[in-house]
Image 1 (cartoon, one colour):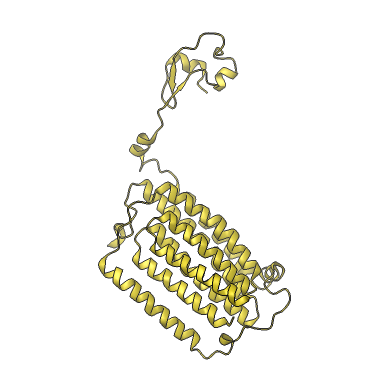
Image 2 (cartoon, chains in turn purple, blue):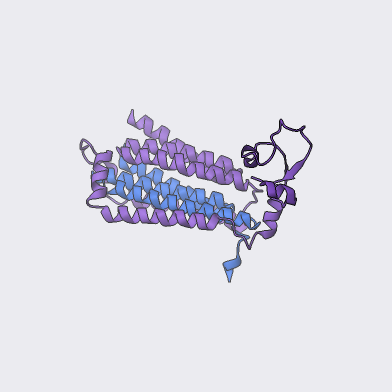
Length: 224
Length: 99
């Protein structure tokens, strides 16, 4: 049973990985990575790492994938050009050579454990209880360092992706929405009684543009 | 299943990711391939944790996940910044730091 599950999960993980590399559209690459991550979580479960598998699904397949999907939707796929001729040939060759070398190194290492099924199972191995205990005792420093790292990364992402005024003046002008908003469509001024309600006088096709300077009369009445 | 099978799968995933980093040119896909490499390493770490019967490898895998999440956040922020400045989203074209 475990062998069948292993092969299903391993084939899913490897096909997902190949799909990430080969599919042209980045959006489908992201979806292939989601398949890969879920299969990998199944492999983690087979290795009795419950908490790692749960974290994998929640953090990766949940949060990180959503981030990727949003960025792909924002940036757009763009045209996918093939890489340079040299790397295009050398890249797969190098990857293949590396795979062969890694397999030889790990399987031919002569470690007894590699060909065994692992250490005898201890009840509670890999559960959140054990992991949490280790994190708060033996590995407290890496835990805290990881939290600081996440804080720094979050701040860095905000700083990197924010709008810069000076660099994008013309772009912002191009992107500004200049759609006119019809008057009497529920602004705060109307609610406060500064501007007559729509029922008091017939609706005129008067429009005001959002974000642009309006006439003095409307400014005295209060725009928002 | 023997631990060696898991190690083989992890090596294959790592190498697919490494090949993808070299072949693809879209920075988004390069980031995805980096994720593949980290995941391959994670699988090896968890497999070794199972082999030894200790949870240290799993702790290591969790820390790797944290680092990967941070890397993705900063990388995607960079991609968004590149897009905002109307630069080509192509790792071969972005050579301002080339010297």
